[in-house]
Length: 230
Image (cartoon, rainbow, N blue to C red; front, side, top):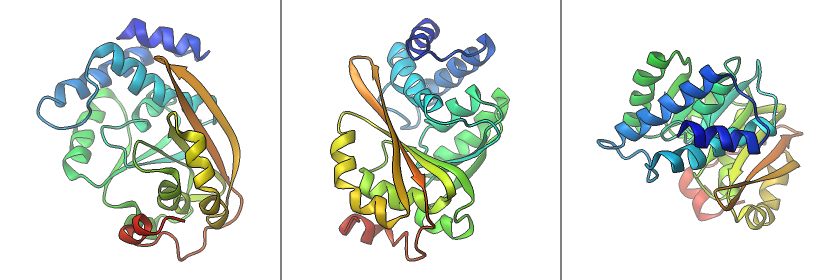
């Protein structure tokens, strides 16, 4: 796992201290072990985890300066991409949000043992945003929903001047085309689209800058968001 990760980081021209690479691999190994008793990931082979979880998460480092900034990972699941980003950039102020309590409890128990500090929240994004509206520099998410749905869940958390950092796969451009209405209505503007070849497939980070406040009527109830995406 370690050598596979180092090769992937080198290909992306990302340099990390050896101690942080060790911590990344230790966290990934904890995920693999926990997956035996809890559904955290369908990817469990160590080399695949290194590429498809760790390296994929760290593509965000090529798209934003996270040092000293606040970031919320919406629908964090097992902690990707938020935890690898925190390990790689300890100065990041990280909030992890997931609707499944047992995942959040596992993160709360595991992260301190690795020296990782993060705020862990259980709940739905469209409900918890009430108390955290436009308070974060960045919101990120991976494998949660198509972009036109995802943006309504993430953009309200981001302060004007911040950005949504959406991790997407091969359908990134198709989803972006479909989400043009959402981008405009939520106060966003596409600033950058960076694609990284990982394990024979394209992994894309979309940087959507917050240029205006998100109207207070968003986000809607999730059933409405899913039924009638922006």
